[in-house]
Image 1 (spheres, rainbow, N blue to C red):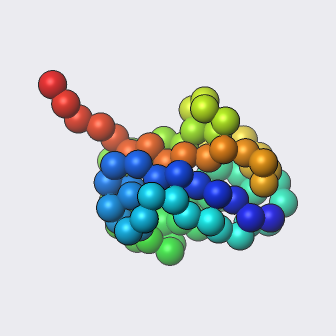
Image 2: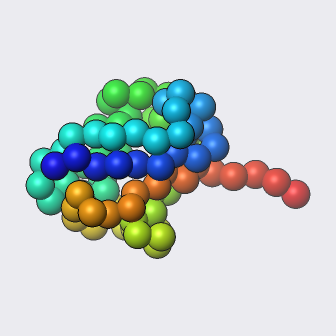
Length: 80
C-alpha cells in the first residue's frame, strides 16, 4: 500500500520536502512506519521525540495504517 505523509518542522527540513509517499505492507503499524523512516532518514532517529497523527489524532505505536489515512509527522516544538 502507498502511504502519504505530511511533514512538519524539523522533520520537513530533514526529508527536504513537505510531504512524502512511501510503500508499506498492508496493516503497517505506526511503529513500523517510524522504523522504516528512521532507516531511510537517520536524522529523524536523533530527534528527542516524533509524534505521529493519523486522521488528525495522535496515534500510539500499535495503530494499523491504511492507504486512506491522513498521516502527519509532528516533531517536538519549542516556544515561549
